[in-house]
Image 1 (cartoon, protein in one colour):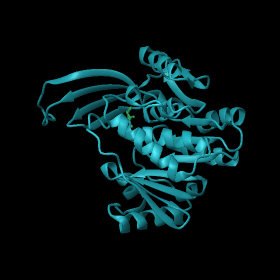
Image 2 (image 1 turned 45 degrees about the vertical axis):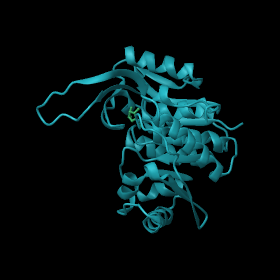
Image 3 (image 1 turned 60 degrees about the vertical axis):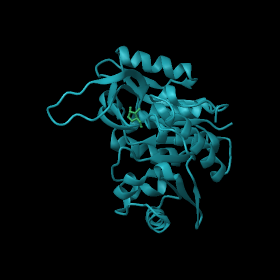
Image 4 (image 1 turned 90 degrees about the horizontal axis):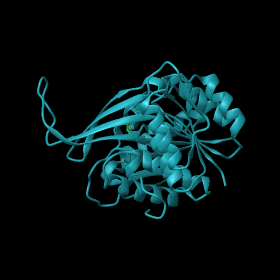
Length: 298
Ligand code: RIB
């Protein structure tokens, strides 16, 4: 079976729930404080591994309590962390998350997530991948490293999935290295200037990203599901109706499960259906990696 290689961020998420968001200068009382492993890269790797894909992580943590805990938890979920660097000087990434009525606001301290350079990622990829393996990355690591890694993964014959989150522009010259671009509505607007909502605007946004060179595009639309192209044809998959507890890591679950399905050579439409169901289960639970479901549950 093909392996899933995730190059991305590892953060310790410090999450607290509150009845209402504080105004400037105000303190409000919260509840349910949780310190739990997260980071878009880590979450996507855990989603792929919990779904059964052989999964390897390329990342960097600090030599501190959070770094140790993140590695321990990832390994517990069978994510191979043999290529995760431990920095002697930097601090592990931390995300401060406030959760209110199921939705969240996140402030990120990237720390060691920004330490790896293009040459580091290239060196690892050159050693561990086979053509056809799935490469997954996001924008929480250093931008030039992320972009160069996409180019190199493509050169090695990998299938590349890019999730440009948090939203930052993708320079045009990198689009042709993307096999599958997965964006939410905000990220799509960032890349195209179009905020995709109904079918027509989604179609225009997808066409615009394909014209730039992305081979296939999925736009996730929150509670309205997702829309994607297969060649020139558009398909949509509705979201599951579930009770929302916490949306953290829902998008990451979608991408991780999608990559695991593609590693099994499932068709894209079936893969999106599995990914949608898995994301719905994540939303019904509190936290990031701990909320991501196993294959049997999906
Ligand atoms: O996508 C969710 C993730 O974003 C959280 O786990 C947090 O670490 C931030 O990176």
